[in-house]
Length: 375
Image (tube, rainbow, N blue to C red; front, side, top):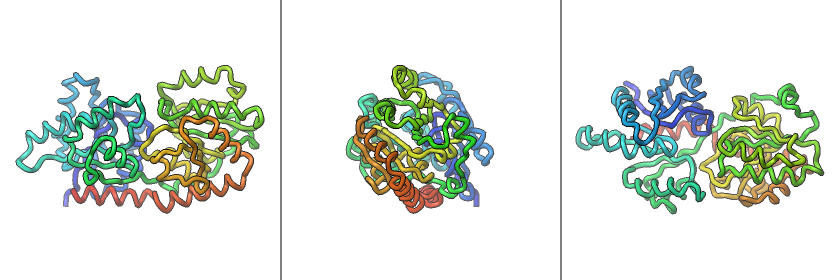
């Protein structure tokens, strides 16, 4: 029996949470499905890893809304592959899928047999900056017959804030390869290469520098307690539009020499394993892969008390929840963990056990496979 063809459309294959989710998941479904990925812009740094796993990736280099040739290339790639199902990821791909590709394919399709185009919702847009995104979601929701979402919180947001009927949204959470994290040991050479002493308490945050990630509050918190805890380091992993602003923020900080902007890294699991605590002051999410991986690595986590994070973290059981936009509460939580190694160990173990039981990669992949087979 020929494999069912699934086309995945995404902006690029850069080193982000959604992209890594696909890298972990799609190879596990290769026995049942033939996957192909089309990137709207550039290929992205993860592309070679997809190709190594036997997944074809094509870039159409779409330059913007008025790039007619880009739409033609996308349609040509789609027709060439002739998929049974198309899944789109993140805002730009979602909009192109529902406003261009869906009408075009439906017009060309045999009666009652259009190719389903399913947006895989990865986040809420619960920030004033993303008003336009929320507006477009509301306007175009009638174009969508079925959604996927990576968390109940994302589904709830789309039902309550966008007005999507709940029966249209199927939740398939991301999975984490917990066995892989178990296989990684802390590398003292990696610590040394970063200038981290053996006795330093290492705080890590893995998140690209976007306004909704809340880095400014973490930096304020770090500066506020630094004078009393000199043997600490803060590792910031990621990049983005807010980086220069954040670097400027710490210019006058006493703690600036203890703050390391590491940029984009390919060794995030190893960095997690040399760290003592994960802080994630995000203002909104979907279901954060970075947070899940930190928990899988056995780190105690401090993160914001928002619905998206409450699915993963129980306060003072598997982590510490703090109010958004509150540097003082971040500082209080860090003081608590730095001064209580036993609590650190307990929270980290609970977090790891929770991810192993609830969000294993195998379980998530089976849910995705069942959904695709049912279409």
